[in-house]
Length: 310
Image: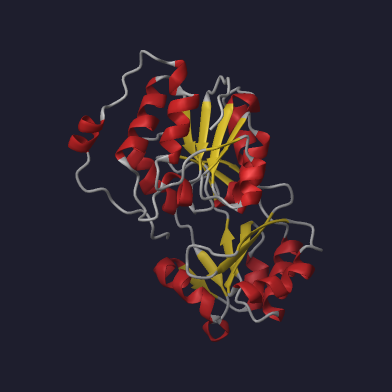
């Protein structure tokens, strides 16, 4: 990592592949670095594709009590009150186009509806079970009782306030529909290898991303984007890494993600998040206590794995 002069006041951290190890844990060193940054007065938040309920336990483990950027930036939710601070939704026309596109390629559409005022139910809307494709099954299994089945006519009619429409399928299946998808008036994220043993495609409102979420949150705190550090490892982090003052790519990130960042840190097996916070934030606060490895081991009992996403 190169030396960079920064005045970081806000840190936005991706969860999967960035904050968490491959085993889904937050290491003692990373916890300590985040706590030290908080003691220095730096705002630390999460910026994730996960739904709020998937980010909630991580926020609690870090002692975060502030707005979180979830659903790929389409929603900002205050934790732990669940109050919705900001939201961006798809137009009904775009939802209909996305559903019909997925159906043409024999992929079951998933719709994440936006709730009003408070993020509480976080239902998962989808079509009749006989149209489920294999790549979707692990996601629906984890979603469990939150899944609401309905006809496609009802799905389109009810999706007047949807945060995103998502496809879970084989990589080749999603790639086949991409030329038609890119013709739609939307933003989108494609993960060739997602969290549910399949590829994932999320269709988002135009202009919406983790970057727009970070920009909204920075403005909320009266900060300029040059005062923000963002850390990520995947394709849906690229815009976020580009717009902030200090974009930090993880060491295992694909080449295009590294190219979008200003610096590259260690991998998520090497405490890459802690390395970046120590170097670019805590170095400006030399008198701040930072736990020793011995103290960290005493504090570390059995850390929960956060790999299973609701």
